[in-house]
Length: 340
Image (tube, rainbow, N blue to C red):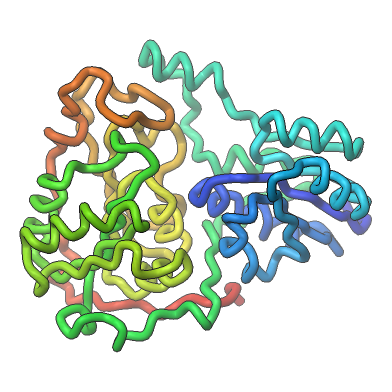
């Protein structure tokens, strides 16, 4: 058992979902290593994901100059580095700091074989559990509490901010995605929302506003509230927390919903859950076109379908039943602090 006080630096520069998926490592290190001091380093754009996390002692931010960051980190005199990104930048940080480090295995070779030849090379293991393998030396174990996401009080969305049609109860649908092949086309989003047939709050960034408006125009204000681009990330998380349940593409808000212990209907296009990034430690339903032989065509995504047909999304079956609505489920209690 590791007993001496230790100062840890965790490295993960991007992106939203990947950073949220590191939170069990943060919590388990802080709670299981006696007197552990835990620092986290990420890009400035993702600061809001971490600044309210009570298990982090200090956040370090990457701007444009890596050398400036390295000087800042060197002054902290860390005992250990936990590298959960494992790229060129983190290699340079580890090299320059010269302390013992433990690095996440990205399984690039296994991913390539899986994507290129559809070989069953990926382990039946969530990426969170692979992240946690970097802490085995310190006798850290998975506490099975899932992901964390802490919403600061200032970002809690008040019910009165929503249209009257959506104040009593709503379903959240995260319509964004880093790549188009991870997102349903707008006509299929309309079809899905019509099947849901319940007040829906559409969530996404400014780049999703136009798609959200198309859906709203097709189905009307009573059914659709287009919140895309209207709220910051923490406020969007607040709306996820207040929802009955969540629909989401394979994107960062899906993992935030999992952290908030919402039931997630996760929608998969060119990627697959077998890559290890499905909703973690929360009830979920996977919606995917399983018989399609060309999936996955990428471990990330494309601007458009490489084969031109986009069958993974265009022919995705919506074969689910929303039993939660029949039970009269409502918004759950907001979570703004650590579990006790």
